Amino acid sequence: MIVGSTKEDLSLEKRVSITPETAKNIIGLGIKVYLEKNYGNHIGIKDKDYIDAGVEIKDSSIDVLNSCNLLVKVNCPTTNEIKNLKEKTILIGILNPSKNKNLINEMIKKKINTFSLELLPRITRAQSMDVLSSQSNLAGYRAVIDSIFEFEKAVPMMMTAAGTVPAAKVLVIGAGVAGLQAIATAKRLGAIVSATDVRAASKEQVESLGGKFLTIEQSEDMETTGGYAKEASEEYKEKQADMMREALKKNDIVICTALIPGKPAPRILTEDLVKLMKPGSIIYDLAAEQGGNSAFSEAGAINTVDGIKVIGVKNLMNRLPLTASNLYAKNLFSFIRNLYNKEKNYFYINLEDEIINKSLIKETN
Picture (tube, rainbow, N blue to C red):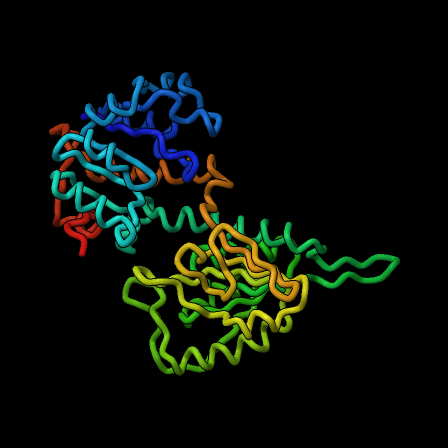
């Protein structure tokens, strides 16, 4: 059996799917690994590093695609890559099925078994494969670092002979993996942190990190059985807006992380709410590529409104490509290990396994 990977479009994606460490682990299962020449050069991983781990380096992507039984990617393959894949090849990646329906349908027609890791069930056995968590953790950290850079003021309280500098106040919207890491990072840097989430269960997690949880009185259950947030009712949105009016007047930095799986990001900060913030304040929208939690948010742009910077994030992992690649590659290895039957030396798509069943794309509508 052969696992292969080809270079991503570097103008869009700098992460890689296989590192020398995970290549060695895959080879340790009894599987060969083929990579395209100069596969990791852009993040400082040389071909020699892969060769030392036992990888075979191929001169072109076509050589890899024509040979492999299982292909790992970060993003969805291109039409040309799909043409060069053999029938019944297994593909694993972050494929974004809702945005790449046509490409995924091409692969299904070609009998390519397509697994998208965003679809993994939230069960204990799948934690080591959970790409959303590993990448969101980094996103929450980076969101705070970037926001503070743009804020252009000191964050911790400082007592000096010239007077006291007050601590910056940070509000985190959404207390999932990214939000919790943003809270932890902002606290470590000395900010006063508060957070809000539609899931009442988040309160304990926020407070354990030293944040203040902003609550809204509600009777409805805002958490899905999978542990994700669900879309709020109109009544809840009105109460949320009332709470935000008071919070936004007091905070210097707002980190937006709220997402609903399979749907556009909820619009939480309207134009009027944004304008309640003080000039010099920052809104950092991690949900910008999914439509944004904030008005004036645009993926890949910084828009200034009444002196308030609204930062829309695009391809955030490209700012931490090596760390993000290391984590992503480990997630992939765990998934590959779960698929591989070592005794019979083949990849077994066992639909009775919840991990395999839920992450296999059977059709797109």
